[in-house]
Length: 319
Image 1 (tube, rainbow, N blue to C red):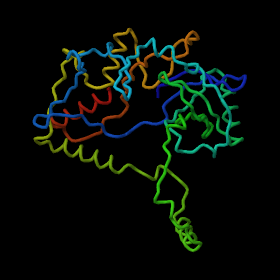
Image 2: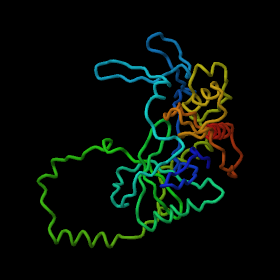
Image 3: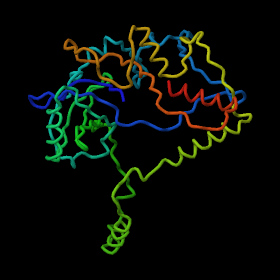
Image 4: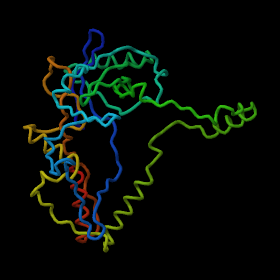
């Protein structure tokens, strides 16, 4: 794993240096849009609706449109003026009983790794959270946005979970429930008996994504059989690549290189030098190409269509 953020947890007068890693990843198979007749990849261009020209990514700004149809364009300088928590610090705001945090508020999870020669302070905070059955509410700045987050521990590892702000959770108001009669004692007893008969300890390893497994088998079978819907893909030409967006990751990576950057990360607050002049973040660099990790399976001799599909799969992993 590659860290996406470096900083420190401000725990009273104690600073706990940490590295932040995404705790989850998607295993969904990604598809591209292609021309049904010949399997050619569909490409998109950023075309200005006013002048009709193709716009390079570095010349694109963000804009807001009001309900009255007024469009306001904001630049990097405008975002620099907005308030944000300190980029390199995760300040603890308060400790609350864990059961008081409604799971509906929970968003993406991140692992925190100690980033110092002595992880004693890290271990102390993790043990304290576990023994007190409390969760720390913190501020966490990632990609120019200050988030409210829950800091908890699992197996001695600190886990940061971004929280939705209260006004981002919709109120549930279903009139059909207003006049529902309360369950009788007999109904509740029978339902509780059923629940008890189906109760087990939770083991996530017992559950599998059968859809993705069947989809992978379908694709592998199609590769082996070949046919009119399996195509040999030629090496993509890079000529004119700046004018055409192959995908968002590639576009972002090119913009980082054009700005003189070396490599990017997916989600980040700041992993460079600490800045105290202005608190707001700058544009986040692009996500670096994922490191290829999967080993090749032993298989029968591949047909040209099989080699083509394998090449596309490798290309997607590098993207």
